[in-house]
Amino acid sequence: MTMPSESLNRRENTVMNAVFTLAQGKERFLVYPYELLNALPPKAGYDEEKLERILRALELDGYLDFVTGDRKGEKTYVIHMREAGLAYRRSDAHRRRKLYFKLAVTVACGILSAAVGILIKALLA
Image 1 (cartoon, rainbow, N blue to C red):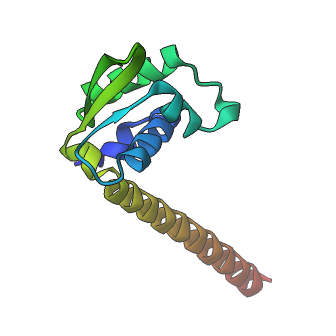
Image 2 (cartoon, rainbow, N blue to C red):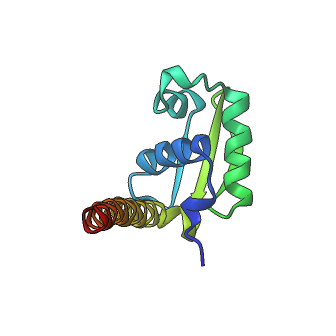
C-alpha cells in the first residue's frame, strides 16, 4: 500500500503542507485565499486560480473537503480535513524515512561493490 503523500506532486505537497500548518490541528477551519497564498513560497508563482485547482485535486485525492464562500464580501475557503489530510505530516515523515533508508542502502551497495572490485583486482594482479 502506498502512502498518501507519495501520490502527491511537488505543488500539491507544498499546498498541503501550508493547509496543514494553517489548520493548527483543527479538523475544520476558515481561511482567506491571501492567507493561504502567503503561506506558500513566493517564487513558486501561485495565484488564486492555481491554488483552487490544487485544492480541488487534493479534495479528489481524499485529503480534504473544500468549499468557497463569501464572508463580508471577501472570498473565503472552508476546509474540512479528512483522515488522509489529518495524517499528512505523519505519512510525509514516513515517506522521508523510507527515502533516506533507500539512499543509505544504495550508498552501502556502491561502497561494497567498489570494495569487491578492488579486492578482485588485487587478487588478479
